Every structure is written in structure tokens, then in C-alpha cells.
Image 1: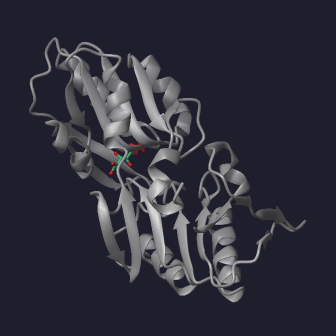
Image 2 (image 1 turned 90 degrees about the vertical axis):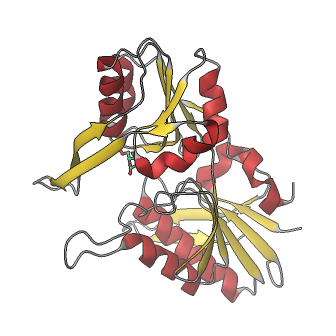
Length: 285
Ligand code: R5P
């Protein structure tokens, strides 16, 4: 049996374990404490790295290093939504590739393996080696899809982006083709969507859109308007991670979406699929 350490930011997930301590010093720096002995133990850490990715990652770095120092034999970090996963390649000379750096740091601090859900840069389910870190990428596609199917009749299954094709191909779904433009000017590193193309005939059909995440909602909202223009009937949006930035949940509902389904990888008001049941192989529950 593993020693399970649950972050205070995951207490709602219903996973049994010892809650580890996280606090902030008055200047904002992080404090972390391991509350149980771990010498010679296999340790599983459950920690969300959202909505404050920098702070949460720092907590995870401190925790991993401390676990190693206390003699943990093996460390598995369960990070439901993997942070810094977006920048997985260099578009412009000099750009830092954040996904690789985070993997490298976790490995160097003693993490043996990471469990994630529909990780943006992996683009398929399975076990991967990334910067010598073992990552198990678990897909929630079937789970969110099966909740969405309850709301519609004989739907066309579609992903709004080719990167999420692996989430729909097993269910006979197809992908739209998304083309992004250059970075917009301003403080945010954001490349706007230039085009979203679709080949499927959706006239009069219900549609379920499946993606790894809804972040600013731009992808889903563009997909919904493309489907509406093509005569689709009811549309349900399903995603593993619902960040819902820029009021995108309301904007999606206002755009005429019947409902939105997500998991609890991120705390939001629309989650109905729990990560807990996917963790059995690592928790031994
Ligand atoms: C893109 O590559 C992803 O699969 C999602 O489509 C994208 O990250 C969603 O972001 P947003 O909601 O900001 O369009």
C-alpha cells in the first residue's frame, strides 16, 4: 500500500489520505510540510496545479524534494490538470518550452512518475517518457462523452481541434481543423483562431463537441457558431478540464449550447465526472 498525501486543494475529490500542509509566509513565499513518515515508502501525492500554477508548482517542488529527503522510495505525483503544457514547441526563436522544463524539474526533484488527464502536449492516452519523466496520460473522453450523450439523440461526435482527435476517434467522431494566427499584441501570449474548418454534414443533427480543455472558450465558441451555421440542432460541449476563463461558460450558454460537461480536475460549477475513480490503479483503493 502506498502512503497517500492529499493536497488541501484536492480535499473535495474524496480521495482518502493524509492532507499535507501548505501555507504562505507573509511575503507570499510557500511553506510545505509532510505530516507522516515516508521512509522506504511508495508515496502518491495528489495536488492540483490550478488556479495558481506557479504557486502550486512551487508547493509540489518543495514537497517532492522533502519527500526524497525523508527517504521516500518512490514518488507518484497525480496532477489532474498539468500546468505549462501549452508551450510544447518553439514557434519563435528564443521561446522557452515550458512543458519540457516542468517535466525535467519534477524528475530532478525526485518524482518517478506523474499521472495526468488529457495532457495538452501528449495528444493521446498512454504512458510516455518526457524529459526522462514517466507520464501516464489518462483520457476522460469516454466519461465526459457518456454524460453528454444523455442530453442528446444520436449525436455527431466531433472535436473542435485536430489535437483532440484521439478523444473522439474511438467513438467514430471526426475533428474540425483549427488554424491559429500570430500572437496578438498586448500582455497575453495568445494566438487567435484564424479558421475552423469542418467536413461533416451536421444539418438537423445533434452534436457533442469534445476537447481536452475549455480555457478562454474561443475554440468551442467558434466551433458552436460553425455548427449552427451548418444547421446543427442541439449542441453539448464536453471537456476534461473546464478553466472557463473570460466568462466563457456563460458565453457558451449564450451562444446556444444546451449544456457543458467537464470533470473535477479543476473546481468549477459544471463538473459531473470525478477524477477519483480513475486513480484506483495508483492508489490501490
Ligand atoms: C487546443 O489546442 C486545445 O485542444 C483546446 O482547443 C484549446 O486549448 C482551448 O483553448 P481556448 O478555450 O482558449 O480556445
